[in-house]
Length: 434
Image (cartoon, rainbow, N blue to C red):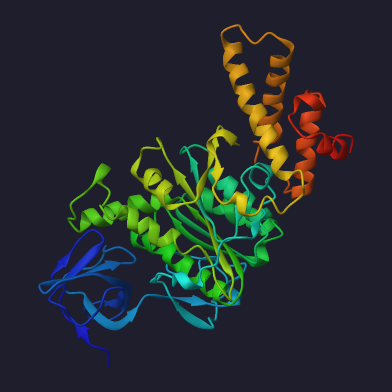
């Protein structure tokens, strides 16, 4: 018989407390039972242990609980089920089936503790992760094992962009983890993923806005725990997290429930380390597979605590503005590891087009005050409009890198003479008239 505790000393908004230490360690799970019938009500996780008391996070919230609720000890860390039968299915924040389909028979239980990976088994990133989006693949190539955010205002179509990436990404397994989703957002993702060619290698973990906050807080750990198991089995896994600002807000609420001393804008002082713990799961693992993480982060300003901390942890950023992926504000810090191993015009045309766009932005500013009337400035202005429409636009059918590079040449040819591009004579002769 498992040990039971007959009295809870305190019931809060999302936490419960018992006196002393009943014999659990951090992250161990207990079951909450109705006092008279002992019917299972929920589960909770030990998050704070002192000599005087132990606090637990309740997965389904504390509504309906009282100090008479019993606690049954399980004395194991929180785990998540794992099976290849999860592919194509949808689950909630703690890994329970959420799509109305049959229960999944799991092959094993995996840890959600996200222990730090031994640095000696981390490989230097060296393999490209193609997304089918020209603005990413050409100008900010991603690398397997990279961790990178999408910075976007709250009204930007960042979830649509994640769906677009999921449809075109060349990964073995795609894991979508949505925190605080509105119901129509959840339905959109289900529809888009079910219609894509990647549905058979995709797993959804979703937390809806009305669900228990604790389930939202746990969701990245469950999704990343499953991702790590796939990677250990040799798979290249892409994890799409949205929205990490929602997740951070839940973290702030739970910290406030615990009466922690708040830091900037009420977030806990541990915000940086909590975000880093999740993003650092990204790795190319020696003798196994890889985990790549793309996390959408909504913001009003780059100085907000969540994007500010995220920027120090991750390896660049993709910036979504007015529905476009902005070249001037986006950066993949690892792209140089792979974009020299592709077609011989990849780096040169990336550099040339970025340079011309910078000049075009200056011409645009000059045009606003009545300048930029010369012929070349007019070329730059038309090039800028073409670039925004056909390169910074992230949505549409996924296209391969070579076709994306051909599109770059087409844009240049529409607006410039070969000598105006800054590209070498050798490349001009090879690609200009294709």
